[in-house]
Amino acid sequence: QVQLVESGGGLVQPGGSLRLSCTASGLTMGYYALGWFRQAPGKEREGVSCINTEGHTYYSDSVKGRFTISRDNAKNTVYLQMNGLKEEDTSIYYCAADLVRNPYANPWYNPASCPSARTYDYWGQGTQVTVSS
Image (cartoon, rainbow, N blue to C red):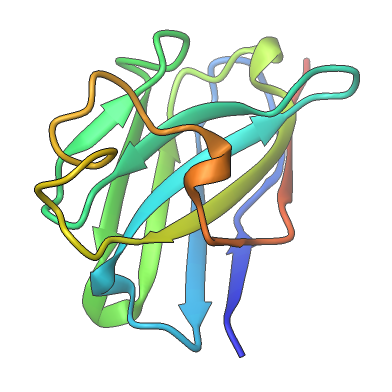
């Protein structure tokens, strides 16, 4: 059974930092592209960042320069380091995994931005991030 579990969320003041982790079981993460999404109350789920199987990273304009995605295939874990947090970053954060059968085919070959949510095969349960003074 495939399971993705996020951790590391919590309450932080504006300007602070958090590091989210997502650990997978039931799959070998090295064969999957990975993404972080977030959804705030009353808003649609939006892509935050993603990393392909080759380690190339992509970010939404709203988080570029503040967030860093990384992966450790040996630990079956993907991370999202969040610095300079703002109140508008408050959301439930989800990780997702997409099996990549051909890294040289769309949508994961040199994308202009992260693929849409419907691309992903598996999702975690989410972890709450609240940025407030």
